[in-house]
Length: 200
Image 1 (cartoon, rainbow, N blue to C red):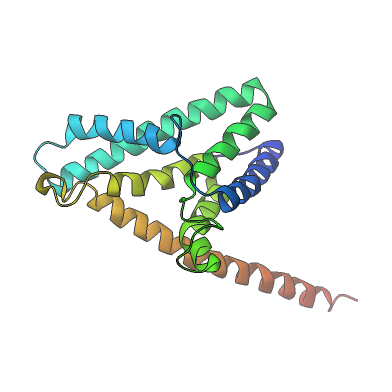
Image 2 (image 1 turned 180 degrees about the vertical axis):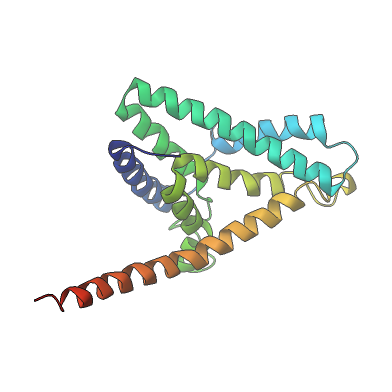
């Protein structure tokens, strides 16, 4: 997704506010929560595609769900942007806030704050920076699919497996790439300053 300069700034501010809201309030449940909307797409794809309980059907259902979530989210962001920057900011913040796992919270008792941030918030930050709120909600879709159906039910044992594998890969990739990118950025600046020092 390509952003204009104004949209880029709005996305950055909505990302910061969404993280702060998630950190302070934690997860909340209400009728229009993105998890509920994603779950409705998952249920539809499950009924339409997932019949025999195979890994292949799970992968097809995953792809179809991601496409539906991407389409609906993109349309909502497009219409709110046309309605005004404030509406776009509100919707973007809402998406970021609900895309961060509810375990990232000051009220979380188990685990440290840093560990919770790395596991639950940092991947959302990474993909939001790359592709905006759409990427955040797509990333959130993966664990919803993976853990929506109980694995003890034989039919659904492989339903969430493709989503869970994809989620783990993307989460670990974000946790690895962000320090690497920061290291490259810092050293690149040092290299530029060093090269400039040779100028007469």
